[in-house]
Image (cartoon, rainbow, N blue to C red; front, side, top):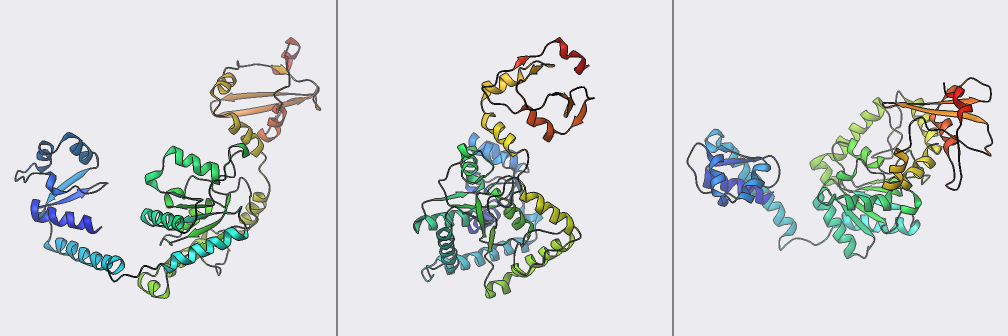
Length: 389
């Protein structure tokens, strides 16, 4: 941020303009020649090489004449720069103390948790990529080899797959790995990931918006597969001095109380004194009881996951002709079942011997399709035609 302010000040002093960047870093004014025309953006194309200009143009650089700004603007930028510089010098200057009691406390707690139960993986969340990188480095320096970090800048498909294999309990056992005990991540990982092989979340910092914390907790509090009877949430609030300055605990806990009172929650998110009540208490209790039961479709989804990447197999499945029929022998129930699909709508109809067909649910129907690979089917003949009319 200090560098960004320095560049803005230079744009003001040297180019007489204020840069506005949609995303990315503001470019140095040195890459542009001084221009006094009314079409500064067009002139930039002439004085930069193609790759520089393509990148800058893609990221949406606009510049505005400084005369259109009040003088107070640049004074505020310089004041911000001076404040940031003083903070930086205090933290990292020659008189700074190389201690981090917050980090020390978290690392000691992680050691204790892993010693108590090594199979309970831990996820540490921070809102900041710099903090995430710092934590990974410090954990490594202190002997933690089984640590993985994730931020948006390393959010490749390969990295996402590594996380899924090591932290997603919904993945079939054969594809699961166990290479990491601790995952350190930004909120880029707080949506769209299942991390329920972890039973502990540590919120290294608390955002003013507590719904972010709820999203983080949702990564390990999954409903499709129960792994641990209890999950643990640890929140790192500021000290009394820090709380006086920023009020993060006061603001976030007030908001979470409002959320709990209006729409409810089944988990204490920030503090132990949260009261879990709402207008939908019965619904929450019913949901909790349902979570205790393993979903009926888990084994079928696991079977699908095991073959979904087998392109040849999937191609064979998709090539099955419409209105295909087969007969299974040595089955416990003598029934006829039919499947039909139109658009996104599917239907199953089941008929027992000499009975009228009945529409049945997917949960009921799919069990009649479960078979071993070794089973041989018999082709259906014309005697079955009257059933399907």
